[in-house]
Image (tube, rainbow, N blue to C red; front, side, top):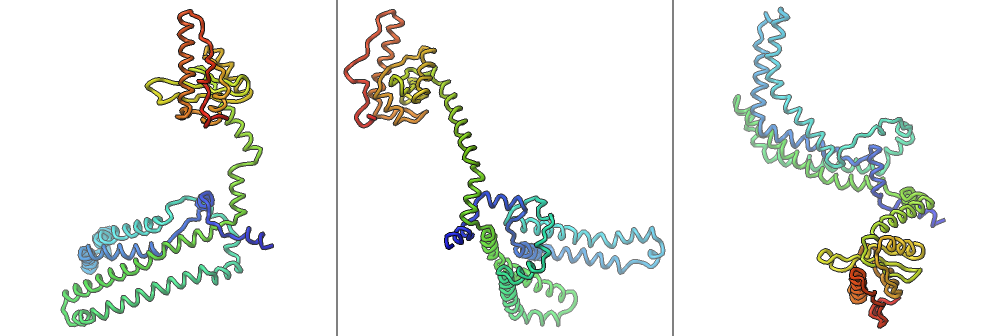
Length: 378
């Protein structure tokens, strides 16, 4: 029983496929507190940099509205033009600011989990409207964490705000005794500074939320060992499918290999069981390269193709077995086999020269010069 419960427990980190599937369903990590904090911080910076200009435009809008003559109220055409003059300065001040806040909120919310377009969250889900599930979520660990985060933010901001106000209490009292418009300018300066510092403190606290959200998101997607096995089985396919794929790959590899046999310089065989085709181009290769190899029927096919294209076939059983055992297809001959392979290529060169000159073909040496060293004997 313990083994079954351990296998079903979600103790493993989510796989890349699990994360990708969750993203396709519209489930991504979000840190909404960071987005709200980014809006506050951007707003504080904008007000600190261009608050004076915005105040002037709003003042013009307010003055235009107060100076509106009563005659304009009785004429609809004139009222529309007057309204435009009143509203234009206010829109000039607020429209860019509000648009910037929308962009900051959108980018800040998407910067953690990225952008995703999915219709899955819009699909009906009865668990969302189930009172029992909602009650359970209300008293869940995630809800407790949200309460703790909110209290932490409140305590930090409240503490910093109290410290700022206490340190600038004399400035606020001075504003009460100042005259217009100096009082407004002093009050605006105090409020902008306090607003900026509070937004920065809230941003620092909200940044701590991002690692937590990432950890919580991956925790919700944790998988059991059985789920990982099922996913791997799904990705790999059935055993029959895998065997079929391996067979197709082997067939394609053999087809490509057979096209390289006519380009080989020599085929070394162990009459019926092994065949290895080597190719060497002086100046283009550091050592001879194995372009085809095989045993059984594949070896017989290599030998047949070599005979059809006039590639020399040399029967050296020990060397053929060593090459097929120690050299991978497409690799160069290892240093330990340089001597034996060089002797074979030299013998092939003498054969080719004798054929071209119409002379008797040299016989196979019987002094063992073609045999591989003891380290490569199979």
